Length: 170
Image 1: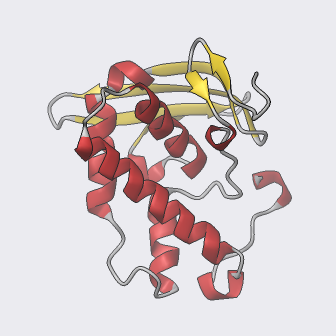
Image 2: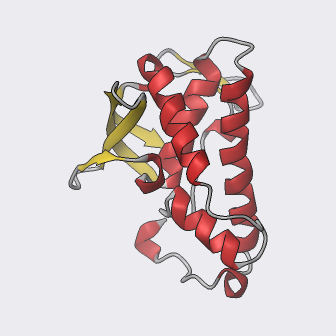
């Protein structure tokens, strides 16, 4: 590990402190978009097109994020296993996952997956995909932007009209 916290993980590649993502919420992409819409920050409908784009991106780069066993996502989510399944008929990917020894959530769409897992998978794609795939970069940037907007508004829960996270959710 270097003095600035960057290290090389053979299974994940170069890891920076920013890659050790910690989510304060287990909310999924659709819930986040709906909360932002309620706060009048987005001004658009919840991004179903973004969810579709994420599923297509996962399908396209399935080989890079196909499965993982008992990996940690930041400090809050440990022992996570997942399996990304291809749906070739619709050119989409579905995600099955398990945190710790909990039950498996089977065949979830992108808007049903916890934000921390989805962003973790997208960061793996960003680190491993070929350079020059502008469409993939834009999709990942849109998810990151949505997440940043939500985190900014989470500091003001009354504006989001959502319950703050419970102690067990973080």
